[in-house]
Image 1 (cartoon, helix red, strand yellow):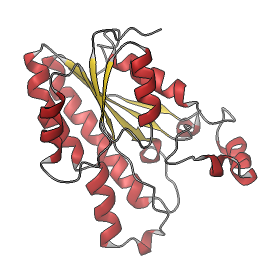
Image 2 (cartoon, helix red, strand yellow; image 1 turned 45 degrees about the horizontal axis):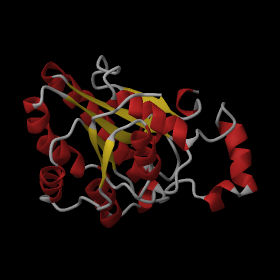
Image 3 (cartoon, helix red, strand yellow; image 1 turned 180 degrees about the vertical axis):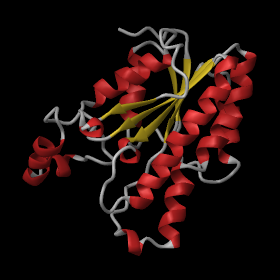
Length: 225
C-alpha cells in the first residue's frame, strides 16, 4: 500500500470524472483529502480555493464535463468556449495559486487528470480533444519549469477507465459498447477506477519524485496501438 500519511491533498471537481475514486484511494493511503466539488470557471475561483484549503502537499487537478459529440464542421463558438472554460482555463490558475505555498514548504506534487483523446484521433471529438491536448502541452512545459523547485507536475492521459462521467453504468451495459471494448482496447475491459487512482496516489507519494512534465497513458493499450 502506498503511504501518504501526513499528506494534505486537494482534489478538484471531486464529484465528477475520477474524483470519487481518487478521494477514496488517497484517503485509504492515509492522506488528509480536501474534496472540492465546484466548477472553477470564474477567474478568482482557483486562488480562493487554494487559499481556503491551506497548506498542501499535493494537488490533483480533476477537471471534466460531458464530452460533446459534434462533427468538426458543426462545432460552434459556445461549445469551443465551454470546453476550454471548464477544462483548460482553471489549470494555469490553480498552478499559479498553489506553487508559492509548495515552494515555501520545500516542494510538492501536482497531478492533472487528462485524456488520451489528446494522443490519438477520435471522430466527433475535436473540441474535447483540443482542450485535453492543451492540458497536456501545458503540463509538459510547466513541468520542466517547476522541477528545480522540487515540484513535480505530471499528467495521466486516460481513456476507457471506469468513471461516472464518461462511462456510466448504462453505457457499460450496452452490448455495442462491450463489443467496442473487445475491438478497440487490447486489455479487453475498462481499466478499473481503483487501478487508475492507485497510480495517481503513487505520483503523489515521495516515491515518485523523478517524473518531470510527463504524460502517462492509462487506457488499457488503446492509446498506444
